[in-house]
Length: 133
Image (cartoon, one colour):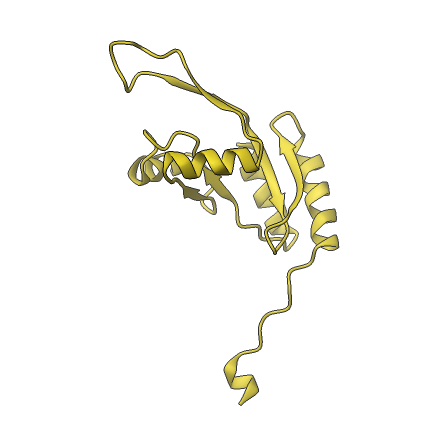
């Protein structure tokens, strides 16, 4: 998978992102189902689900398109979900920085992330209580 290649190259460059996968089908994508699904993807990805309302709010906030398609009138579980496939890059404060579509090349994504990380460095680590004592 492309995102896995991107994450591996970035790690080799000393950049460790925290990738999140958010389902758009919470009715079928239970925590257990996402755990099974995760076996096919990069091990650093965290999988999230929520209520239908939470997913709708997140989808709207990030302008993610999704829709049930090919529904089977005889089986509520037999349907496809058409959706956009977009990777979003957020800064350490959770603010939007950039997005990447599935059509982009791995090298182009890596270059943009490297540039963005330089422009949005993580905040300095908080001083430990021992250092303050």
